[in-house]
Length: 234
Image (cartoon, rainbow, N blue to C red; front, top):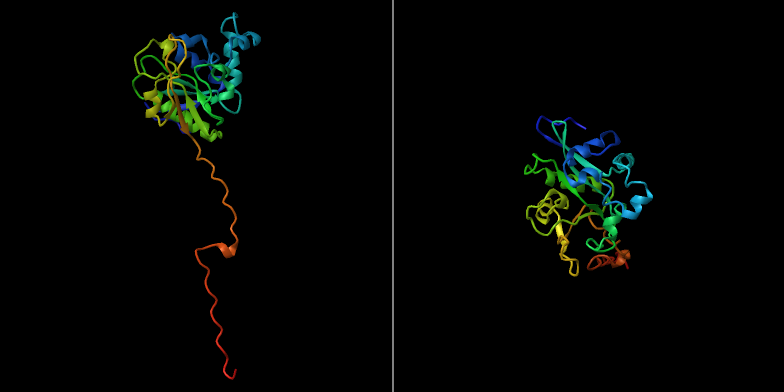
């Protein structure tokens, strides 16, 4: 990978060696103790994995293990070598809390990848970093065979505390090329954040195979055979 020019944004898959960069980005927010594990596991799964009540070391180690897989658990944005943004990404099946939530039920049976959360470091916002990360995430998913990428951002663009802003907004994802496939769901608790489902296709849909056509049936009309001329003397 070519080295970025000074001031240029570089977005790279998270590696185990750079797992602390996620904490650098999320410092001072609710996500600082999350280590990208909140959307992945339910409370019961966290207890079963020993990820609760023991400080942050087990959670950091869990994210490092995820970063050693072939598919990175997310991307980190850098400017001049400094981590300034984080976006989580992966197959929907990797995010159990997302998959079972009443706020984010499946739309259909497409094997989508999802972006459950993203954040830009304080002092670096308003510079297009979030949209660049969303586009980079969709491209990364496409390279790993994802047919589509989905997100569940807030329906409105009102300014919120960082603890509630990690979903992103519908407008943000729309600028990155996503389109809305489902509006806010009815029947949810009133104190829940209204969210929409946004999706971008990362691979063209497969066309059904063309039925084989007998060679004599192809074309609008078959050419008539040239009449044989009578030979002289006959």
